[in-house]
Image: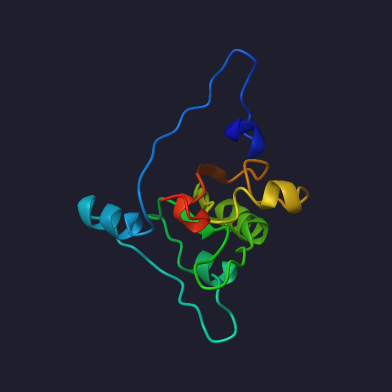
Length: 142
């Protein structure tokens, strides 16, 4: 059901699969445990989401993915996954790299499909390769 909601291409005789983690601190833990350099795009006053152009500037041949958040902790705003996808497609084309996108569905993963069905943030975009399920604690489910 979630795979269909997020437009995953799952064939008639196929099953969607996934894994789980807890909390947004998973990025720091992952980087520390697997010795990965974590690069972050700083927010600035009046602009509280990742700037896709700045994110793509940080991408190099060692980048394993770029993560975007659909529902920022600060104000619930969606990061522009479509623009990130388009800019990263161009950079991949120029460099020959294959840098994918991970979407942290945060608080927006169960909102966007219903309120903004035309919004392209999910598996409809060619570089979106993984999406984590929405954060239950944002819906007072813990």
